Image 1 (cartoon, rainbow, N blue to C red):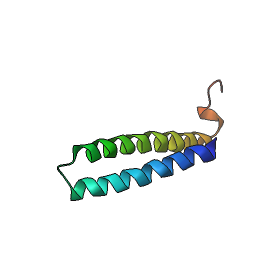
Image 2 (image 1 turned 135 degrees about the vertical axis):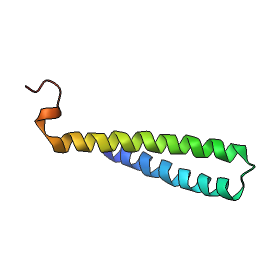
Image 3 (image 1 turned 135 degrees about the horizontal axis):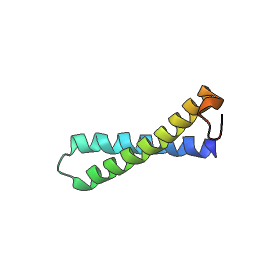
Image 4 (image 1 turned 180 degrees about the vertical axis):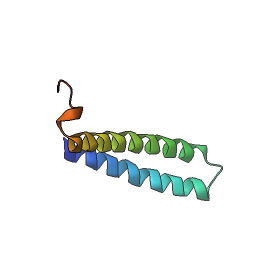
Length: 68
């Protein structure tokens, strides 16, 4: 599952960068802007999910639910 999340994060990052580059070159194309925002939001959510999970894992038992 973790490899799938990392793969989806990298794919959405690559698609975001590509569409953002085209948006900057062709500013009148609203479809590319829509794709850029979509891929950027997808990348952000996957990245934050992985980053927060990693930080909680590194923090130890004090942040896990049910720990006293």
